[in-house]
Amino acid sequence: MGTAGAGTYVAALPIDTMPSAETPRSLPSARSSTAIRLIAAILVITALAVGREFFLPVALALCFHALLRPLVRSFERMGVPSALGATVVVLGLLGIMVVGGFALSGPVSNFVERAPTSITTAREKLRAMGRPFTRVSDAASGQPQSGGAKSPPATSPTPAPAPAVQPPIPPAVTAVLGSASLIVAGLVEVLLILFLMLAAGDMLFRKLVKVVPGPDEKRTVSDVFHQTESIVARYLIVTAIINIGQGIAVGLAMWAIGMPDPFMWGLLTFALEFIPYLGGAINVGLLLITGFTVFSGVGKVLLAPALYLVITTLQNNVVSPYAYGGRLKLSPLAVLLFALFWWFIWGIPGAFLSIPIAATLKVLGDQVPRLAPLGELLGE
Image (cartoon, rainbow, N blue to C red; front, side, top):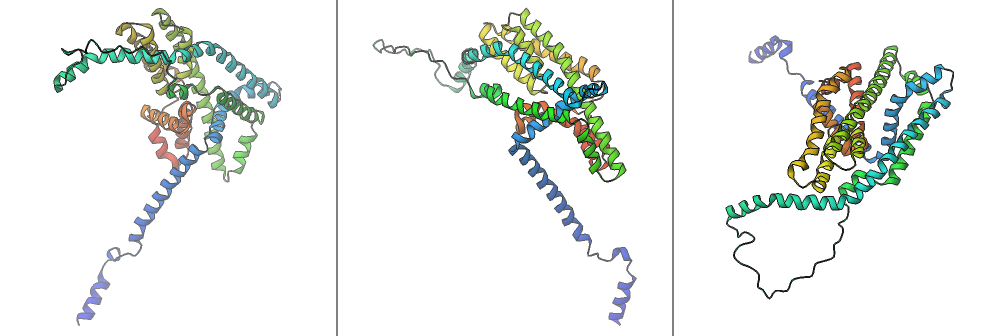
């Protein structure tokens, strides 16, 4: 009787209340998928960091390819072969780099020679400015202050002054400026890859579309490619124009307050402003170090970086939103995080590439449904 009743009760249970053998397996499966994605992301980041010498020149060449491909395409419309058009464009880019390098070589070499003395002078002035705070701290802690009632005995011999030794260039300055031979070798590698990409014409794009299986996927690849090329090229062109104006303004401001080498500060502003956030921080630090060397008063020392920050703030809040025209809809926080991440992975060139990479990922997130969360995170 009891057994039959129990069987009847079990049979009367609704189907959805019966224990399922598949429910407990879904959680381990989701966790395994998340773990696999996390491991894959770590492996990709490690490969990018370890393979810096391979990935960085290719990434820079792709960035400049998006900028210069329209020029080669205009030559092709006039009947000029792709290889000849690529040669003219790459040689023109090389000429611009050579002229800019010669223009910066003199002022930058003088700055590097003065860097140890400038840093030492800035350190001494900062120490002198901090002495009142040190005395207050010593008085609060009960420690005897320097210059009290006790004086050294009169018979103590005065040590002979040590010969002045020029301090070595700090490693940070050396790391920022880099080795000239390595920079030249890297530029040659990038230009060679860029030339081969430009000379190939649309062959790479056609092959990429050909290997994609379905028509919808082919259309998506085509849209992503053209949008990325347009956004990256527009970003580089607009940023270069903005940086030229900002460099002129900074150079004139430095000339007006008596800062040495105003032309160098204008060129440095043009170059460093391609690096979001971090380039401005480097420029402010260099202006502070030079200001401590040139000027005596604290007000004049702080005037140069203050003027630079005012010009940069006006550019970021007035000029840039109007110039970009809403095409580059990236979150400022995402831009900062990308700049820091790629600086950590690839150094200064990585920080330069951070916005083009973020813009490319934003386009992928907008066009590919599976990557929609990525576009949402990077967007405004």
